[in-house]
Image 1 (cartoon, rainbow, N blue to C red):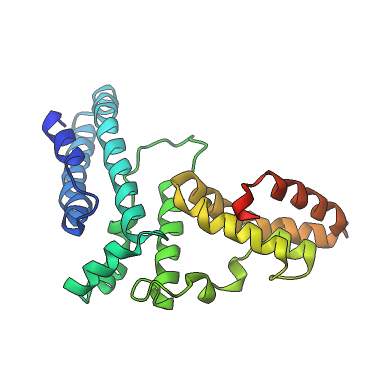
Image 2: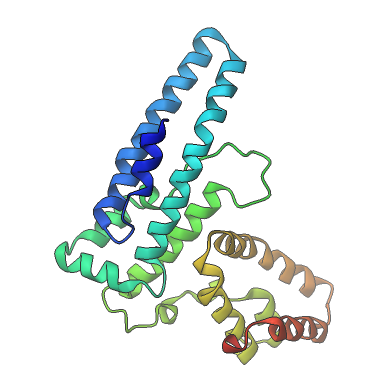
Length: 235
């Protein structure tokens, strides 16, 4: 990857869907071909040092790709930016169906090979993005932004621990936590990774609490403290 690649990526306009498509299809294909050649060279001459050096060289370019992809996903498919996708729908009524069909390409970051990273894996990132898109797609939120996409959200995707503590999916404290999820966590990469992690393991925690008859009052105390730490506009 040379300087022209970085220049091309930086010049992509995150307000233009055509540039988005160019990134996730054309530029992704460049990396796919490079990785294939790199793996082929490894299998051919067993030069693991050369393979690792080559992989290390390409990693910064992949990181640049992922950063730009995150900008595009936020601009077109995250809450608060519906105007861009609505305008795109006017020009291309089938655009949402195209994204749904090719969602893995539109939402999948490049694998950086960080096997031992503490952050969310690319699988986690794709899962959160695809689920978010599907929720909004199914509810019609992208077509009609005045609709609240949370209205059609499956109740199983609520705050499991808080729901357990208050015995209600619609308790005011639970609503505050859901608002924090939607307005803060869903708007950045690591927040979405945390949500994915939470949905995976919180049901296990709740089941454990139920099995040992853990006092719900203690959970409510912890939640109350956490809520007080949130910005006032979310409470």
